[in-house]
Length: 623
Image (cartoon, rainbow, N blue to C red; front, side, top):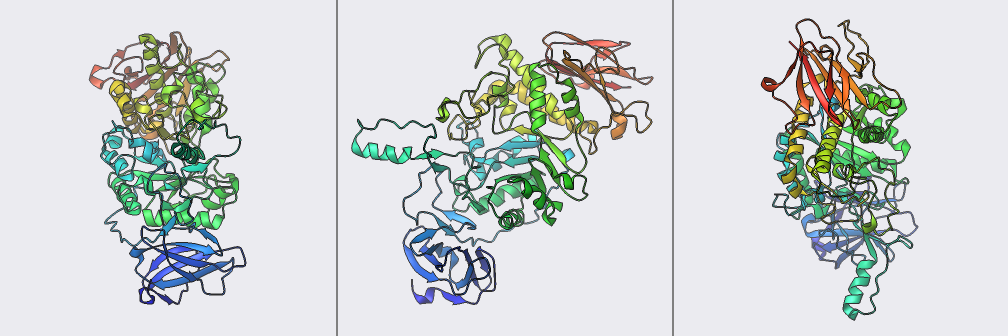
């Protein structure tokens, strides 16, 4: 490098990382030792050090060293060093050296390098959709796995651009939020720990060069999800999730396309317990400002949630925590929510027919506290898919290399009579009905429903409930299953539309189960074999839920009958106002579950009706 290629100029910026400013490029580096650091510059795309530039003394508080250079940023990559130690900037905006997913890391300390973002981006007229939680239907996915399968129907598989190609499908399904598993630059190949459970293969009979290659591979373990990397580059979009050399631009194109279709993009971030709060705040603010991200699901130590929730950022961006801070519940102007594991556990047990859980289910149906929304789900990325939930009684995690010791032992699943895939027609039909029932429970409860990608068409992981270490057909969304599951995907689409049509199923305020508007009916009431008396006894497995539309400024009533029993059940019908009749609107035991209004059967002068085993039925009370 010639001296004419760069020039050191005054720098007043006091933050770590890199920033392209009008008069030069700022570099900030924090060190804890006594030896002052230096900046290493590389020609772009190479590991050869072109220049080693010591940072000017003295440092700022906290061991922060800064410098500003006049150079051509598109031509260089960079690292920091102190003595013989070389490291990549933990605040790098882009990272070079991880463009291929699953590639084992290089031995050289120069194999990873920070890149300097230089390409200006035109956001045009981009606006945040700002969808209220009560209007949202969330869809949870892994960017790479969602489109990697050969039948995914996209050109740029496993990338931000590939996900963008799926927007028409997601829009047709009816979802308006996507929550993405980590998309920041994490190390997907991590060193194996002693006693990890993986067996070391016998390489003695292999050719020397093959054995050496195998030893190199066997030293590492796949982290497909990206939650466990404490040294992740949290400011950089993942290069291997991009189909181009510009992951930042490709990610922005994706976000802008979602926004144009009135859909939000939320990101998951997993921070280690020792993570500095200032860095966490800077990271989330950066993604919000630079990438127009709509919100974050943050996994961190308990105190972080409350600190984050108080930031001005979360007056315009959503924050999803594992537990909403008690001190901030009900605080106006905050877009807070919590992930509701209890919904999953309670509803799974009711779905399979366990005793004593109807009362818990009746709470989950209406729970929607003010000041902190609830994100409800039947399945999540960790655990069974919905197809596996109705196909397996036990987990099958031997492929993970941990002797089936990993993953939860209690899944509250039921295989419907046969373990694993079945050729029996009656079992396949029951599994389909159970999945419809699960979606009915999810989509007709208050709170924000979250659908796990592929559940709507029978995606399976072969009973593996912890496939964090697989990048294969096992974890890639199986789009080939969609052909044989049209009935289910049509049901999910129709159920999402039905939820959106009836505001009483997704109110902003929590249902009170009292008549606080003097309409003659409570907003929600529970019924069983007797009207107005929900059967919450130990053996009860059926619940009727009557919704009065007047509390959502709608005409009429909805009666949702949940029969989780293996036998037919009778449900009593409350008397409707004069001039109204009950009409069949939905039945999960039917092939076409949602019945068009002109074809609906009217129930004249009846006080009760029968619901088939393991079936959910909706009646509409209208004139």
